[in-house]
Image 1 (tube, rainbow, N blue to C red):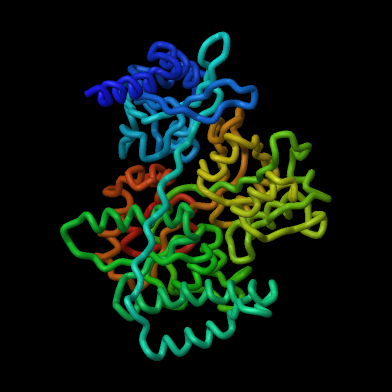
Image 2: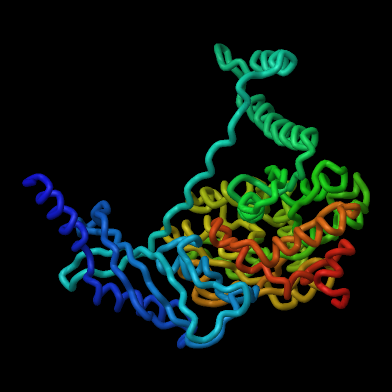
Length: 493
């Protein structure tokens, strides 16, 4: 009994650390007023859930992480599906939560008086003046569980695995760095190809998504999660890929049933231009609908002197991996601003994940990434390493939209990322759901109803899924649409 009482006292004392409920409510209200359109949201109620200690600040001040539930009331109607509106993921980021912790966003426009609930957190530091919020804390989404493997390999596959083991011999003298890089790259391609072919052999419907952890993969997982909840058994498998270019090729070659492809890349594929010149026009691929916008981000450190695309001359810039839509967009943006890749001090192609680390360490000056906003990796980095988005010029945006079918003009709203006080003018592709032209019409109709009407994307951690709306399903589409899709959205543009 004595030990139990001591435990209760410890728990109660832990809950009392940090600001009390009234102080916490005042600071949350202040954060809302500072971050969002004046008069849009009011803090209706707040419940303090407790706190946990954090490492002390550099000056030795005590820090705690406080958990709370906030109920917000909309003072006016708001359409979270508007491509230039605030994302629920932005609301989560400002209040230190995550996408799954936002509730109340409706399939159609929210009305004045609607309530939004947010599970939030805040980092607070004790000073002589009391507890002060110093940063928002975004909790990471738990990693996906590993896929189950086979219990044993067949005799033939074991023979090849033995040969592979002899090539990748890590014993003395081992392999050199160049050989290791070659083997790693080839194995990555081989593993993806094996997964696709096994799915086809088992007559599974394959959906080509994108790199592990990317938004394409999260959207596909949300769709598959909804399918698995249904009473009808559907054999569908999401397969990871490098992204848009590979996905389009897989559809064109009959190696995937469905895929997500950037709208501008889809147009290049359908016309046999750019990276698709060797394969020629992919006539089998048709559009089912645009899901959400993928704006071009040009990211620099907040203190950088780079203020325009022209300022990239003589700088070290990551343009995206060679087989990515980002690479195509980056080169087009440079060209529209009369800047050539050769004008850069260094043009890298490591991709956004590596580029974020290189930007923080000072090894590059800027990088491009075409991704739905807010991109969670950028949100997390911006909370500890201030970044800035460089706008595109109005003339370049007009030129890009006119000359590259599939692109639309877009503004990334203010407060999309920590420290972003102004909207950023840019261009965007759309995440386009594509399929083979011979896919049965009844299957396409059922799929579109699932995608645009039935899936709760926030429940599956997809920040961009909230943008998916039947009203914008034809926006940015520059390739032929499946007949069932034309009927679903209406034949008029």
